[in-house]
Amino acid sequence: MSKQMSHLDNIPSTPGKFKMDKSPYIHNRLRWHSSLAKLTFWSFMFLGLILIFFFRSPSSNPLPQDPSRRSLRTYNWGGPAWEKRVRSSARIRSRNGISVLVTGAAGFVGTHVSAALKRRGDGVLGLDNFNDYYDPSLKRARQALLERSGVFIVEGDINDSALLRKLFEVVAFTHVMHLAAQAGVRYAMENPGSYVHSNIAGFVNLLEVCKSANPQPAIVWASSSSVYGLNTKVPFSERDRTDQPASLYAATKKAGEEIAHTYNHIYGLSLTGLRFFTVYGPWGRPDMAYFFFTRDILKGKSISIFEAANHGTVARDFTYIDDIVKGCLAALDTAEKSSGSGGKKKGPAQLRVFNLGNTSPVPVSDLVSILERLLKVNAKRNIMKLPRNGDVQFTHANISLAQRELGYKPSTDLQTGLKKFVRWYLSYYSGGQKAAG
Ligand SMILES: O=C(O)[C@H]1O[C@H](OP(=O)(O)OP(=O)(O)OC[C@H]2O[C@@H](n3ccc(=O)[nH]c3=O)[C@H](O)[C@@H]2O)[C@H](O)[C@@H](O)[C@H]1O
Image (cartoon, rainbow, N blue to C red):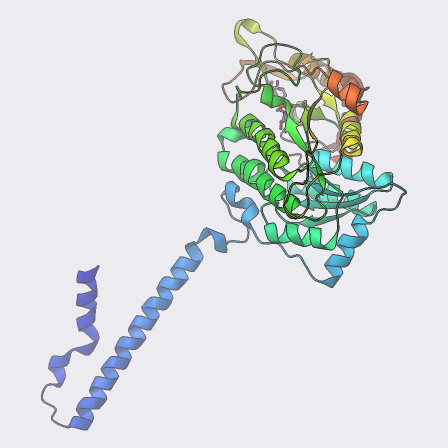
């Protein structure tokens, strides 16, 4: 580099050419010209370097291509009109109602929970970063649905402390329903950073803001059945070991449970973690098997059905969305107040974890048979060995704790729930006109 610079240095001045000139005026003018040329040259070089840096810098791109940087895009928020919408959406409209900040409100569970809270007169404000982990148009459609029932979704990321602080400045939320997360077990091998970003950094950021809020809200948040990992004792009970996660997704959810313990212990935040078991239903997630199986069966594409070693059954405790919503609302309603204020703990606070499952595991091959009957199309089944990508063989929830403490009682079997899902799917994608997922 220094060699090149000294070479370039010699080109514009070419002092030998002007040696014969004796006039000091001309000499000075030439010197001045040559300095000007040098200055101009280096200014252009400098400008060029800045432009190259600017265009190559990933953070200058409003929609970064690297998915782990997706949520670093900037969002517009603030201003009197925006604050008015926030206030109005979060306004409690029933006696004894609560005001809830729902993170991940444009997500599957977030949309259903927000709508249910609004229906009973609670104040609800949504927050979502609308990332493109799956088709964002489905998230926009859910947003439109909530909009019609009076729920405003603020566009932003849970990692944005300034935004979160602003929301708590505008509304004294009594509760936070934290559902924003990077979901999906298998995708964690493709994009590990996005799990750390949302499920760990984002969660900590949210808790930091909640602990400093005055009053502190009570927090209910989505953990996962996947924390049971390689646990073989069934049905899974909250007391069972959760120290053998089989995927990074599971590990980040397990980390969330430990982080919740810390914030409860130090700051007196009331925290309830809900271990959801493979939630399905209308407006669901296109990355989940029941959803893309439906799409592929209708398209006549073959589907891969996993089986364990020695033709072992792979099964899930599929849980219908309406049952999950009831569990979420019951968790909010039984959540005690946080005990601290302004970042200081004033006494012990509630810390809970519940399984929210269906307590009747169904083999994945049976799920496919139900879909075949409902869709009236035979699936092209490709049976394959369960890949080593984070999936576990079996999940089964023991729900007695949730039954006792939350009055949780799931009432939808897989056949009934899938029927509702298929009806929604066919009407939403109106005979395959829109591309699913
Ligand atoms: O309870 C949870 O905490 C998690 O539930 C969900 O994970 P899973 O239970 O793995 O659901 P899902 O992917 O629908 O696979 C269903 C079944 O199909 C099998 N499966 C899957 C894909 C495939 O091609 N073939 C197949 O047989 C597969 O082996 C599995 O047995 C959420 O996605 C996750 O975000 C988290 O919330």
